[in-house]
Length: 366
Figure 1 (cartoon, rainbow, N blue to C red):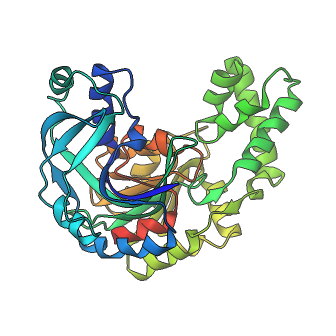
Figure 2: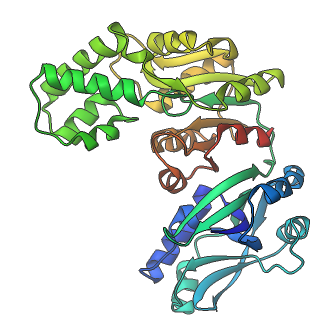
């Protein structure tokens, strides 16, 4: 186990860098692992260094330009201008820092990679994390993250419900099983049911189980029979840190709404059941006459109800690619809840500005 403090690019930047590296080498580092090391610590107690990040709260996000591509110690990296990043490095205890992002653990053709980098432009760094490197699995685990303050303060947060505020997986999967049993559908791998967490249900029935349009519609009706009428919607639990986060944002006067494709009345009932409804100014969901509204539609419904225009000063917090892509398409910022159903890789690749395993870290932006 090794520790290091790293400057992380936002998802859009990470995906662009990965795309460029992939065009130059088959050994490109995936988006969720791209970082610029501020300080290498080695083997140590993580608790001893967690507080080092507190001083990063007052730093604004860093926009940096690539200078060159260079092979370094058996790897290939993009070297960036150090304005802003060098000040952060000194803050966390690194006196000598060359801002660079390793894009492949092997050396590759520098000229070919340089050519593919032409369209990337500036890199946007939005987070500083205490990271753990697991040599046995090759994974990087963010133990604690502090997000650098955005240029424009956020005035509103929109939250997805399933996978962001509540772990509703058991209730959703149970209701899918109920529907399949009622239709005598038995030839499927139960592992595929986890893919139903997030996407529209009719689409999932057709895509993951190969059901016809008619059977997918029947599956939706049966699902709702169990989920809405027989209590499946209450088989869930609120994620750690949700209440603390909502209370803090409410105290700061930040407008908040839920934007979910779950039926609006069901979402409201779930929020009431778990005592969360009091924190929100509005709950936007699919209307009763629509089977499954588009994510962009419910986002705009929420913003219209709050009297707000879409912009980067509004942030959407969600756990799936649909949340991130819908937010970005409307010009909103996006917070990826990697503890939910999608995971860090999916959210980074979708272009999330901020990705975290803990919802409470959203508070470092305010």
